[in-house]
Image (cartoon, rainbow, N blue to C red; front, side, top):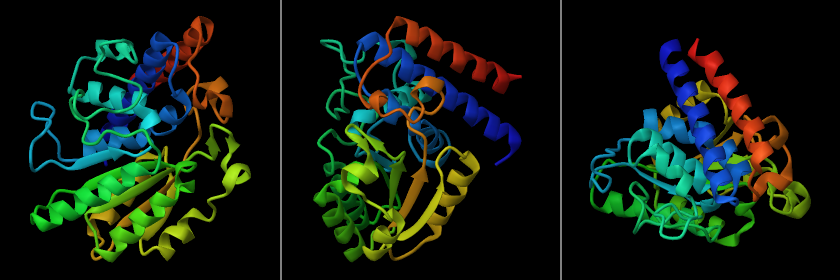
Length: 280
């Protein structure tokens, strides 16, 4: 991509992070850590990679996205808002009674959500089913899904990957947000999933490991995913939990709590400074 395209995406990703902080602070609950770590790849998917139409969210020929790690909904909502699916101002209604932006994605009420998720391990199964259905319909649409590295401790994940490999779902891209932390601590101490790339390969995927915050690397990997035929593609995204907010980075306790007023102000000041640098 050009330097101008890169800067534009970086600016959008920063705004997405601001949306994550604003929404979780307003809700006084939520999951900012894993939302911040996935902000860059989600920004790239919705602003560069995927074929979507915010004015027609259920367009039959769109690409599909499934947030298997459904607790990272604040990131997905912030991206959808920036993309034009609904007003950015609505992000502060997160988890409020009557809001269409609930704690986990809900397909029946939120524009742009392709699958309701939250029970860990189930989203990738739905994504594989979508990919097979699109194959049967002879559509060229693609399916993308993001899982957490703690989530892949679930057995259903590996059943879904075996299914995807068996049916040669080369229209499916499986991404692991490998930020090394889950709600109970470091993933290698809770139940080690490592080596993630070798395990994905053993289940029949074409796999690569990249820096999940480097938009150029994300672009290159997704390009290779589109070129791969006969098997699903796996991308292990090496990321930092809480990326972009200094006091949240690599701190496990930020998996599932919201910033208080003082922490909110600090986070927003840091992100606004980052935005100012990018916009120069």
